Amino acid sequence: MTYPGTILKAFQLFAKKELGQNFLADPNMAKHIVAVARISSDDVVLEIGPGLGALTVHLAEKAKKIYAVEKDHRLIQHLKNELAAADVSNVEVLNQDIFRFNIDTVASPENKLVVLGNLPYNISSQVLFKLVENRSYVSRAVLMFQKELAERICAPPGSRTYGRLSAVMQYCSTVKILTGVSSSLFFPKPDVESTVIEVDFFDRQEISYDKEVFLFKVIKAAFSKRRKTLKNSLTGEELAISRENVEKGLNEANIDPSRRAETLTVDEFKMLCEALYPLRA
Ligand code: SAM
Image 1: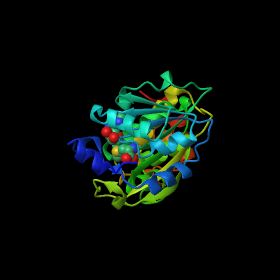
Image 2: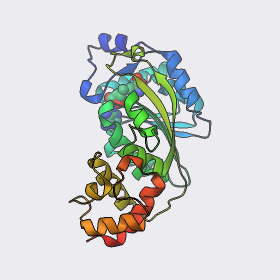
Image 3: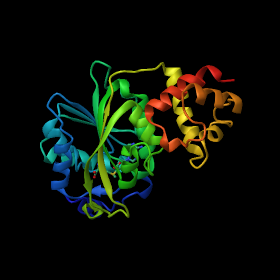
């Protein structure tokens, strides 16, 4: 692996902040991340933001095939050079924005992908929502996030950091922290520490698509006013349900209307969704 700073300097490139370009510059950590990701020779991997290939070259040794989706056209040739130097032939480099990329063009419910990525901090949550929407094509994801976000995603109900993303992710997957990554291992060095997590999506889809969309709205509304009680946070434009019906739904779901969102388990959110769904205006 060529040190990212060397490539950038040699080709007079600069790391783009808006694309979250902090490149992993430590081959041992790259190997470690791929090892904890438990990639097998049957896995087809979608790598989001391969950059200069720090993780890609090690992934290629383990996976059957890799689709490497990189938005920055300036990096594509350098990435291909790195892969060629490592004698890698099972990587398809795609110069695309992940938000314009249709996952169903490279996967199916019978042939699901493993997603892997050291994600730009500014698109982390959006990427998670994209994966949740496309989870019939994704078995699991191994993703590097800013440490605080990773901890929030994995936080249990009742804890200070349990929030919207924790509830949404824990509704559809098992999440766990795999390893921490020091900021000193990147070039340029970011201001924050990183953490790699695994998101193991459940096979089952428990509720209909429409109800799931509504469940996500309930979770969003409940956490939008964190300090308010549920009877207040759920009454408002977001759900368009009257105060009277919000209280009715909470009672039906056996949830004290004076509780706050961060105390609700995912099962309670599901019960609340079932109770509120028929009461929508
Ligand atoms: N994986 C490389 C590594 O670990 O060194 C690069 C990681 S860097 C934090 C994030 C990468 O994602 C950059 O290469 C950036 O250009 C790319 N990227 C940013 N936004 C993207 C998007 N919307 N779609 C695809 N790639 C994107």
